[in-house]
Length: 429
Ligand SMILES: Cc1ncc(COP(=O)(O)O)c(C=O)c1O
Image (cartoon, rainbow, N blue to C red; front, side, top):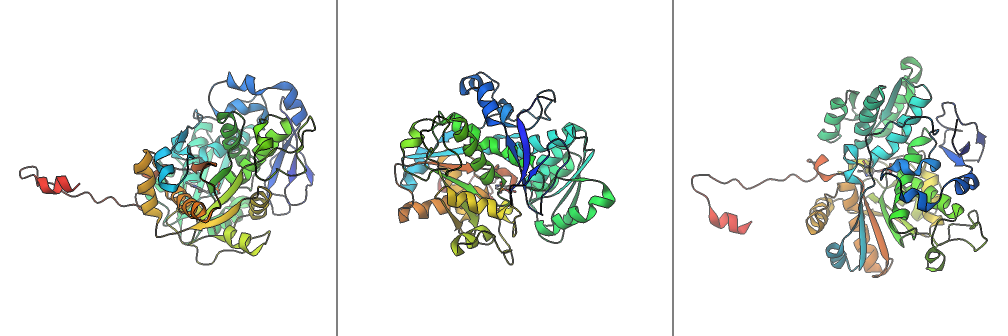
């Protein structure tokens, strides 16, 4: 069994747990994977990676699936890191990039987590999985489960975007609309585990979606020549992406793969726990900006109050459906990561989601989802307030494809009569 995992670990108290058997949570909180990074360092170099196929499985030594097991994959390729000069100028930034995750299978970054989690579930002998979803995770889980030949049950709020409902059914999942929020759907998955015999694939309630999402950070580092950006804006719901990226950066720091520039630039250090192997001190890390929507911002509230755990957000409501997570089991991991990075958490205006979707998409040709639209609203405010400097290198994650959200931005096209074209109307655009 060739892999580099040393053990699993309860995130709340560091308890070491065995690897190689099915695991959900420890003390009701997430479990994370720990690696023998010294062995990884001896086995592979960044130059080796560069010669591998451009998929997230190029980071195989930093993923838990043993080398002799085939991943369940849909060919999830590296996503482009797109310079956005026009949008940058509008915002007052000279170095704005969008990492476009919408180009992944099933149109969102959820495929990163699911290729890892479903691969591990299959390797561990799981025949049936279930999960609650805000939308995109359900579609991705259904697709990867179909690919693996595993049965999949999906529970989603009744008003989840229609495309997410459609894709879960399309990929053959048994999908249900629930008259509640994702937390109510999560309870159904929990309550049904004994009776239905399914494995709970909820975000951060199994250890491996986090490892898949971690590859966003690995990939970003590789694409930037192992020199991390100054600021990352990330739309935060359950938080797997934010926590995963921070884990990736810490592992890279410990591997000694981050470039010297990361040690010289201003910004927060990754903390005393991650000295470079040659003793040159801690590398500088990006400031993480956790972006939520006004209508559901539990992490922002906890951050502002200086708390480590978030209270459930009352009456959660936002058109950015992926951010409608009123209570997250990994709240403390998000808040720790944001604070360690010297970053912040901020809520974007609900009323401006449609405007930012249109503005960002039309400025650069990237189909920006409502969740990422929230990031642009936050970014505009941060730049105006001096929290982000004009020449800093800023990366915004576009986590999903805008066409999956027809409800968020209804496009009413003007009608034309084929026999009497109204050219004034055409000229007006
Ligand atoms: C498009 C999109 N962006 C962001 C999120 C939030 O992701 P995370 O759980 O990593 O915080 C989701 C979750 O459903 C999503 O679908």
